[in-house]
Image 1 (tube, one colour):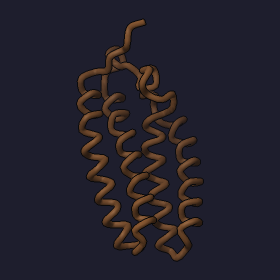
Image 2: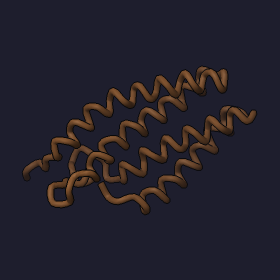
Image 3: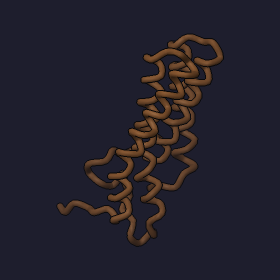
Length: 133
């Protein structure tokens, strides 16, 4: 069984996504720490944003490849069988919602819970609305 290869632009995007996810996580951590004043909560929001960024960037590069040359991300044996773009954007949305709820004065448990629920709902909507990558 031969291993499928990704287009060069997707491989480059995957490598860059590591750096960009780290930069996004640091920026969100600093912003969340300023807005919320809670380091533990800022770490949760930053990690979720970083992971979402890491998932979305290769997906975005994949859908820009012409259909004839494209290898779907979920068809490759080392990637998961889920919608990478939907998961990435949903994680970032969950972070934004959780931060907003926390800043509005609710506790960390409520903010993380509401963020998780909104992220789950966003994933369902985005997975069906976005093209397969």
